[in-house]
Length: 319
Image (cartoon, rainbow, N blue to C red):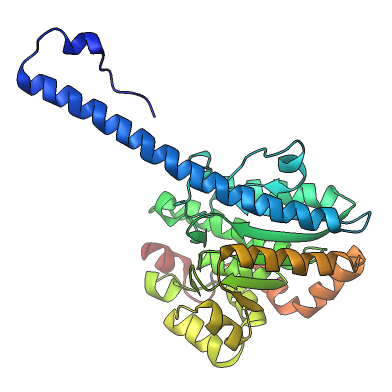
């Protein structure tokens, strides 16, 4: 944060009492903001360091030839040589990168960044599992609708790009685990569902589909994905009421694999599961083919794209 243009010399030139108080107030405010910002950043760094230590412990215990990758939204920091390059892959706006309050929304930049990260994972012949997780309040709050605004062409483009991302994660050729340590809303819920396994913190966040409330219907591709992962009455509640599922309710409904007390234990559980999966050294071609067959209805809908039965002009006019 840049300091206000106030110097000690200014205060020595005997300005009016009002001017002096305003300048002192500005100095005090800047210093307090700086202190608050510093404290907040230290807390976030401590959180990331704890994750990094847990991650390194699991990574170092893997058998030779195995490597777990981690896509960590909300922070990008080279904690030790090679850690960022080989383990952590951040995504999102640069302005969001150091903010625990970031909502980790999907837009062209963040989707492109995730694809680049996934490219790196696929190029790594030792990669045998992938963990998605987050720092802060949100796993992801979905599409960046605020940025899209009323731009119909941008909305269509971002939905098409999101379909491609969901399909890629759904069919990723190594096991994927979502460690949900914050709210997973709308598109954030879908990204978690696209993963093979999901563990969630009971302390922080809900997982839900908010489209019924924001008056934007789910596309056939999104519906196909959701229906392949959420079943029965839980599907009705999720899609038609926007019900917010806690971690415990998600487990009871069958689409969350484990509920943990807090983000730290959630992250550890995800790593433990990833380690167990990595040790199996699944053949990538076979693993990816099995998933393509298992989710062939969802895959076809995601590949076909489109917005479904509502005429596009009518849908876009409601934005």
